[in-house]
View 1 (tube, rainbow, N blue to C red):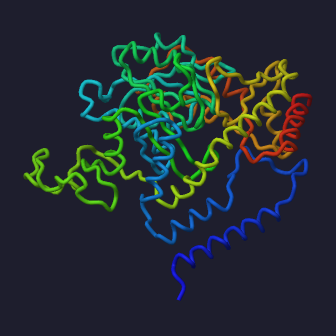
View 2: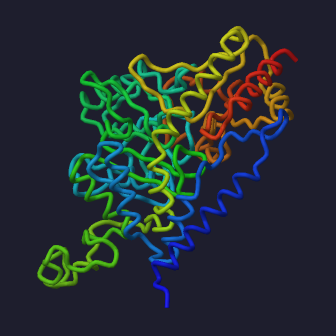
View 3: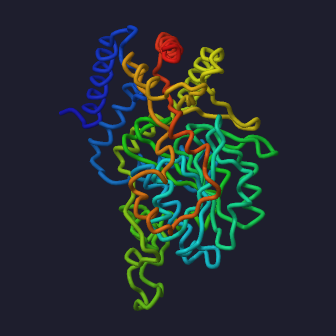
Amino acid sequence: MRTTDEIKQEIFSLIREYRQIEDASKKPFVPGDRIPYCSRVYDAEEQINLVDSALEFWLTAGRFCQEFEHGLGEFLGVKHVAAVNSGSSANLLAFMTLTSPLLKERAIQRGDEVICVAAAFPTSVTPILQFGAVPVFVDVKLGTYNIDVSLLEEALSEKTKCVFLAHTLGNPFNLKAVKDFCDKHNLWLVEDNCDALGAAYDMGNGYQKTGAIGDLGTSSFYPAHHLTTGEGGAVYTNNDLLGRIMLSMRDWGRDCVCPSGVDDSCGHRFDGQYGQLPRGYDHKYVYSHFGYNLKMTDMQAAVGCAQLKKLEGFIQRRNENWETLQAGLAGAGDKLLLPYHEEKAQPSWFGFLLTVRGGIDRERVVRYIEEKGVQTRMLFSGNLLRHPCFDELRKAGTGYRVVGDLPNTDRIVQDTFWVGVYPGMTQEMLEYMVQTILDSIKQ
């Protein structure tokens, strides 16, 4: 009788054969074919890992999750990583970590203020509002589409506790200015790194990975992102206390730090005293926070482990694709505002942002580009304050604060769109995209 390992190796061999056949059947790009803004880039190794996990049938977080967290931590240079079920959950977990009573006077309380931008994905703001804290919206700069750091001091109040910002489409915001501001006023800094995995910033002593510079960083591993686990995300930090809190809140709010399926790793499962519980109450069922269950499954993490090995190559290809678009559109600066980055930033591009100018109608341009097969996207909410989810808050005039009139944010709503740079794009696709965009502004 064959062993299970022999059968498993045969299955893996068949997966590789299947992948070869699938890859060989792909047709070359023909101008007019659909070019998505993103697509999964993978090979047999992701599928083998996924099947390996399925055969093991450990359906929650297990060995693959631990391997993925360790690998991501090494890549970013952080000590603590909590893999979660989505990037939105990562933002929720990061924010709620900062509300823990263990942080004493620095804990975010209801009514405290958090500086952010309205030109953002909604779930970087949602946790603030749902908790009862107050988002304070400031404007962004066109071209980088990141926070205008000159407005930080104006946004500050005696209630400010935190700055929560994303690196827009892989383009790092001015981390030196923001971090200095946070340090000066003893504020938490959360980096939404969901679109910028692998980006870096020179903080004066060499380049450091974004997401690892603030107090907490977040990632998304949705298929559009730099690496994918299907659904998935992560929160990470170098702060030991924040690391302990985020794991507690991710795992139901429990006080115990044993991994899933492990008992009594501390040797004190039945001899502690917690809250008003009887002494010796089982530590696995002691809850120090009002938490959640946000864990990543081992099947998702198995895919992520294979993707991590390709991450550097993915980032390089994204940046090369961005440079190709930048060079191809350089002569259209009178009609298109091309993106740029801070001098000390090393982007890890997620997309290529464009703002029409000179009286050009964005809707007409986007319709033309889409009709020619090139997928486009808006800059997420554009201005979150203009959306129906803010209707009741606008009517009440409470629950948030705005610094100034957000003119650039409103300009984004009217005039900005982006196209993809994902690593599966070919040179033929990129050249077709450039020509299509140039043709669109001539119409």
